[in-house]
Image: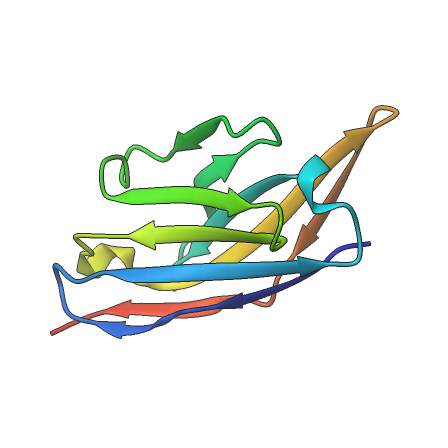
Amino acid sequence: QVQLVESGGGLVQPGGSLRLSCAASGSIFRIYTMAWHRQAPGKQRELVARITRGDSTDYADSVKGRFTISRDNAKNTVYLQMNSLMPEDTAVYYCNAARESGGITYGYWGQGTQVTVSS
């Protein structure tokens, strides 16, 4: 079991920055692939960024060059640095932890943090 708690959301003007944090507890953090997803009103949840246990990263095309995902295994925390924010980035952002074992995928979600980009 993994418990995930997001923080760092809020209201920011277009062009501004925010850093989201996701603190994990309850299991061996370093073995998990960590990801940020988001869900805007009336839309499906989508993958924003992902970082593997080996620190490989990938991003949604819409955030490439603006967002950076990173992890600190010593602090059991994953971060999402969001720069040059746009109104279309407004959504609830969710942290996800996933690992595979014996052909089974184990996935865990945080409760989400609201990001609103508006002037």
